[in-house]
Image (cartoon, rainbow, N blue to C red; front, side):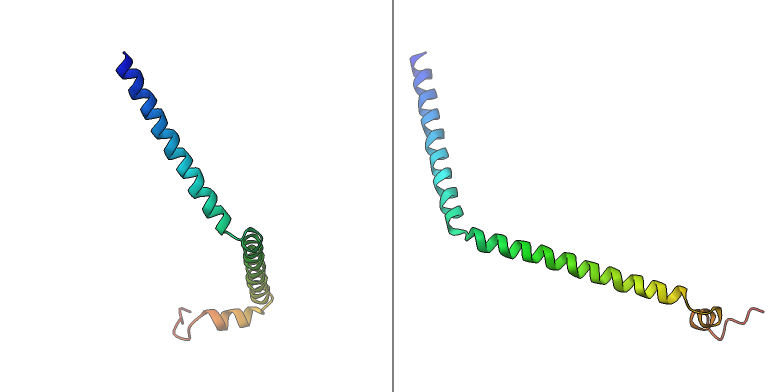
Length: 87
């Protein structure tokens, strides 16, 4: 039983050592990141993506309105071929 208890203590000590090393490495990596700059760039990127998406959506809506407000003759002329004489 005593050998088993020592093995368990050694295993727990090894786990504690690995855990401490992981915390040290993680803390070093976090310290390397310039958090304010990272957050500012992230927020700026998200804002730009939202604005670009909104602009594209407004342009598409404008195209839709332009199509809807055309006369029937313009619509027929733009959406049929001269070869489509099925009449």
